[in-house]
Amino acid sequence: MKRLFLMRHGEASFSADLDFDRTLTPKGKSKVSQVAARLNQLAPEIGKVYCSPAQRTKETSGIVAERVLFKNHEFVRSIYDGDLQDLMDILENSSPEVNEVMIIGHNPLISMLAANLSDGDYLNMQPGDLMYLEFPLDSWKLITFGSGILCEVIS
Image (cartoon, one colour):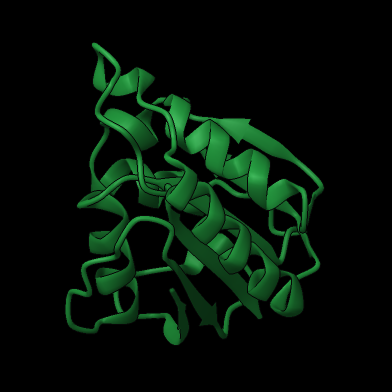
């Protein structure tokens, strides 16, 4: 069984000159902390976390890491400026020994990934939302569109 946690960064301000440099608002930080508390109940540790290198996702990742142990953490540029296939490649290339993977990213891509993997309707993730999916598979390489089960949306 493989478990995937997809999270959209927390609410961000528009005060930075560049989109990449936007920071979380106090409201965004608070919501991420609340969602992380629930995530800790589901998965007190996560084997691999992939995160966009944008400032707001780095901050989101840091807040979640205060509540959940990240065994391995990697910043991946394509989560910020890539496409759906880039995210699928990240998942498919995850180590088979890792059973829990988390991706912290941006809309609309993170919501599109959740909808495609669960073969469900598109759910527009709000800032700080997290979707938890399970895959009855032994390897991340076997993941395909529609192969996941959406277990929970944490908002």
